[in-house]
Length: 394
Length: 163
Image (cartoon, rainbow over all chains, first blue to last red; front, side, top):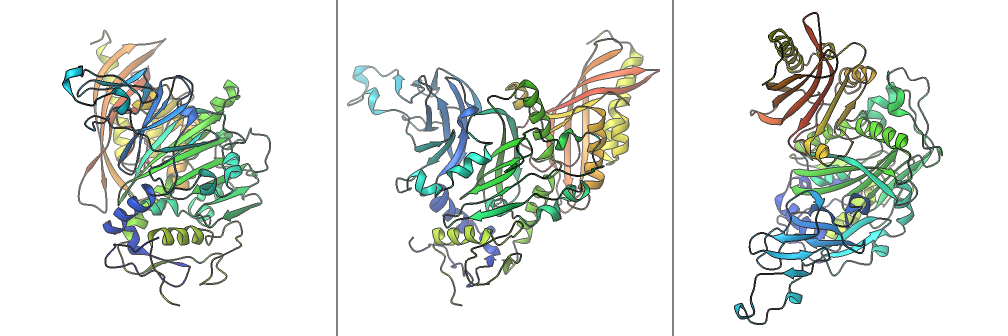
């Protein structure tokens, strides 16, 4: 993948269980990550089609610092544009979401339709040479849509979405509750005061230890398994076990499960570089995460119901999704607190070390049990290769 | 402004002061005591969600049991996992008018500064508007419903305590 311009070079340890702490806090590493990963040949989900269900619905978002505009066109198709006017580069749309018939740049009043075609422009025939409207549509990144999830890449070298997902398409379906027919319930948005890799590296071992709610609810996890692949993706699927004889909550509807089938009742998926999705109890959450600075990560948790949910089921999902996960959630508020501490602690020499589930300190792990943190090692190996960090000799 | 009796306004203002004082002292029992004993709700939501008519909230404690559970989250479940931070609430009543029987609809601006104890500076945690439904009985006011709508769509820090 080419030589890294990062200087001084990162000395990546020979042991597969170690990750250098400096990669979380070095500005040159961060700049190279934006180039090689977020603007490189990886795919990043930016929205789900159900967030913009009607013709003219749009959403703006970012990939690194690159502004994007996602819209539903007149034919019901999904369009993703660079959010910049084809004339002088002005940001075309500034609203976070809304509904429009066209997008107008206010600077010189160039108007684009929902497919990005330039449809109106105050230029007269004598004003310019060689100008035709056809030459100036809104530019687009590459787009792929999988069960409603909208992936983009800025790189012509990115492989097909099938190659990128590397067999994880069915896992994406599971975590979206069986199909991609979702209904948006709303967002939790949080600025995390930590490097993006800290967020993405959250492991399976911490859950019963950090999140005391599980212990206080006498809530043991169901039988489940973790999986990971060489493309940096990983995930978790488990039967849902419900707490027995809990006395912590006065309103037990917070942990009530109405989804019926307990099998695969709890799933999560982490796609390289930074997308994650979690289905737990009756919550379906897609997490659109973007690095906005070396030490800042913007997390937009989008929560969904299913298209065919009853009003009562949707209400239940809203009540559960609001209070169970997210920045004020019963079993997740603590994550943000720990990520902040991880970031501060990373400004020290040395390595982070993986322990739980490690069978061989040098080899890539091949098997993982339910709570092993070693599953994350495969994602780190993919990251190391993409970044071109050479491994030290054993 | 509104044709509400001075004694009502005084009771409403005293309630708001009791409420923010309890939060700034991290006194969760005091926070709970600002709400009606049997029927009350607290919702923390962004103005962006409200305007987009999206029902999800950051905190959706829509009955008395959930308010009591919120106190458990903070004092028991999360104990020892978060870094304590200091808050300072400032409020300004905008409007108070009679609503349904014996209740008053109150709008109040809020600004909450926060200070991480390991840093030397103070930052803004949130600004926004409280939309409250207040019951006044025997000169004492309590919240029947309190909704805090934040101006910003994202929080700059995790939120342990309600606003």
